[in-house]
Image (cartoon, rainbow, N blue to C red; front, top):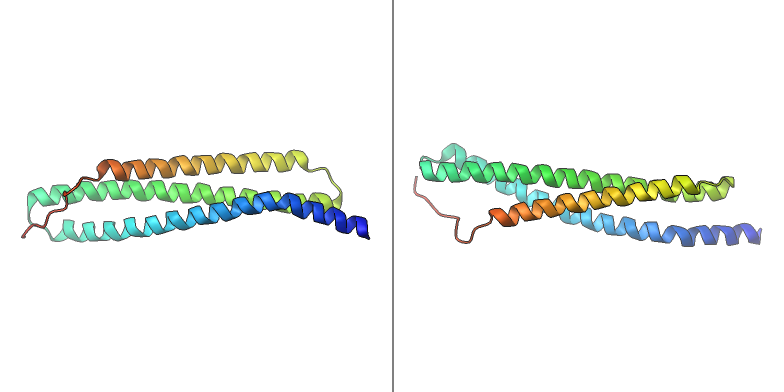
Length: 150
């Protein structure tokens, strides 16, 4: 009985690293969902401006900003999807670690494969997020927001 408890304790120790990774991914998802919410709010404002403005210069500026916001929304959504997929693969790693120990199967190849896929998905999520941040920074111009009288 004590050997199975010791074995279980070892598996739990091994599972701690992927669980920390899940915590990091959850924090990253929180940041991205907050960012997505702010972008969507700004897009709604710009959509109203496009509909109601009579100033041609301001209309063109608003339409361009709206296009940029939709590009950013797509990038954030892609990053959230990749991050979520990474978290799912990490969860699968944890499950197979326990199942392999419980059923006494050597699932090491499967576990390594799933973990590497999870890391690649996380890398692509981070790169996509970086691309969105760069797009936001590149299009940001100090003092560009003007108030026009319609």
